[in-house]
Image 1 (tube, one colour):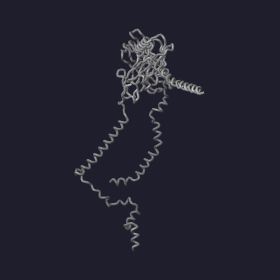
Image 2 (image 1 turned 45 degrees about the vertical axis):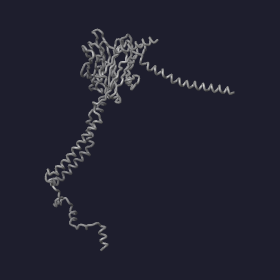
Image 3 (image 1 turned 30 degrees about the vertical axis):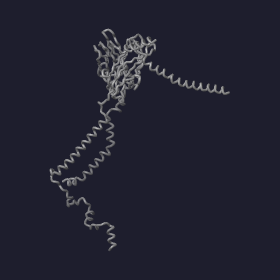
Image 4 (image 1 turned 180 degrees about the vertical axis):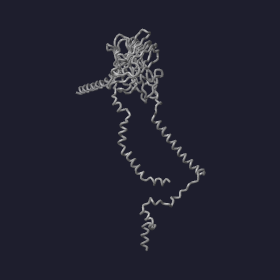
Length: 188
Length: 257
């Protein structure tokens, strides 16, 4: 019985050890938005990170994220959604960013990008990145209301306060103009 | 009669003792349950799953195992399905443990729910992030990250991907309100000190006669610009001024006369 327990324990420890050990190339692919707000017709920056945490280099690495940003709802401003790297050595990382512009507002589900790579030039690995999840694409007007400079509001405010500020200033100017001589005498 | 009462009492007493035992039994029943819950974590990993762990933020955490309070800590978990059946990665649980006793939980973070299906020969990357609270600043804590997953047959596996002591450092790079206002206060104080010193020094220099001849004010000149004064006020000036002294004194003077 005791022997069986010890054997089980040994198996468990061995299993746990094997679980986190990677002798081959192992790429962790990360996808995250860098922009805080997604707004229609405004730039939205995405970043992809590839981390090779294995012990060998990964070859022919490709990131493909064309399926998660269909061109009828997103415009690609800068960068490619399909990239290829010849080699990512062990213990290094690559980041890739893309600027896109949503065409419409509403909820959008950001899904995973697909990354493929070869270890030893023959074993194909298919990795999916994390999913940033559902995000809201703001209406342009909604965004402007919160963050745009409010020149219009300032103009209206100046119009409203003009009677009390500009009006009193002109009154002062008028009364000052009535007594030009006296002021001169005093200073003389 | 006596014997029967003794018997009855003894029966009642036995019942009471038995009841007390039952209550005691409830307490002892809880212990194995707790032990079972602890045992859940030792379910172990599946041989068909390969896991990897990597800190993304801060970038040097993979080597140094140091975090700053108030700054996000982000890590990635890689899951590789080496078997022939689907796996479903359910969630990850992150917790801070007491560094000398890992069974003592200091803080349990919200689980990262994934529920992602991983087909055979496929890999998936999962992410999680947390903030270390200020109260942990300057202390080592045990960081434990477990990943819970299921295979197609519904067998539950738990894989530990990170289980090490990390140091939590105080974040002193940012602007702290306290020191900022202290700085402003000292600047104000020094400006006030300079002003006072300037006043004192100028007084000293005046006394020693370094300054120019002092201009002595002798009141306004007798030339009055009568344009400013209303006519009737000028006429009043020509009248006799009232008698000096208080009205009371004048009254008493009249009585005396």
